[in-house]
Image (cartoon, rainbow, N blue to C red; front, side, top):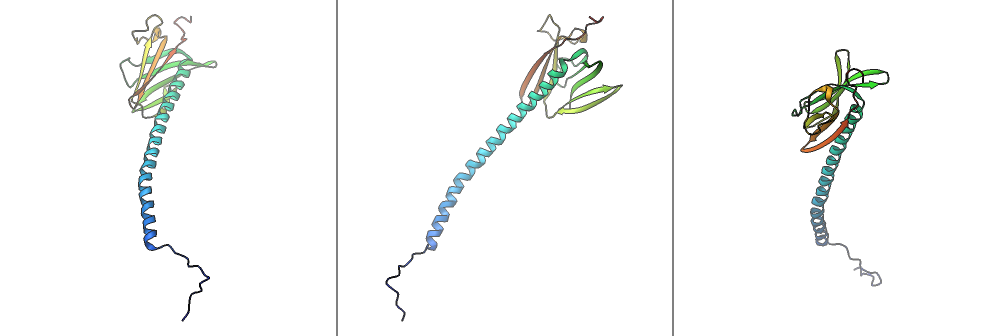
Length: 179
């Protein structure tokens, strides 16, 4: 019979019960941590979507402001109460005059130039709820007007998912008679 050597230490191994208990503890910890990580990720994505929406509205209004500020003449504009509005204007581009248009069609803001009788409209922004143009003359800033020859201030209102953004543009349009 073989006898164990007393100088050798007996190593203790992990038992199946200990291993099962350790795995159960890890499962409980992961079950508590995973929902927290999911909630944090969902919160991050919601905040990112809101920031993208604000950024897109800011860029859209900035684009409209920059182009309307160069207007020399308003050609056509939608009624102030129309939520799918449009505005058409002429702007000086160097030595030539070009006709531009902004309009809301099917939730998308389109922008483009007119070449002869043909419009080249491109989508500029998507998923907008409303686009309104409120126009005023230089004397009365309380009552919107629709007379293109008297417009000196254009307020642009747009909304996305219940949030409304507004910009105002003071126009330096040419008056009739070249003044």
